[in-house]
Image (cartoon, rainbow, N blue to C red; front, side, top):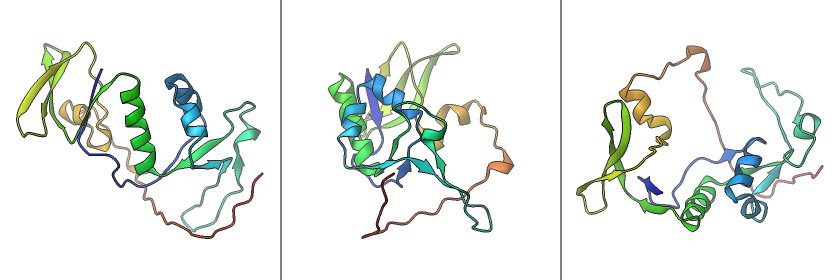
Length: 171
């Protein structure tokens, strides 16, 4: 397995509030114990605010999820993403950071590899049985094939802030 990442980790990225269903994925990956041992804040509920700023009642995960996955984490993305990429390397992936995927290579309609711009600036081709487009919001293949359909009702904005010295109650 070869993993290409255009950034070098750690890199700043807005924090992430994980949801409970990620618990089982992390367990299958062999990553759950690292997450449990991490300094990330454990999260037991979510709460929403409407356009007027009125907050909903908290939704406690344990009310709907009756097993150990009723807890998740609020992660610092720079630390979390670095942990994930290091875990991939520990599991045997060859990891290239600071490398940009320029295009997915095809034979007919089958993806067979990628062309990348390596750190030395030269293009290189890598071939594989499976190619995964994990380009996130840049959506390389979705844009190439015009698969992306935007829903105008889902245009959202996110605000974030950091707090020091805030008291957090445990349930």
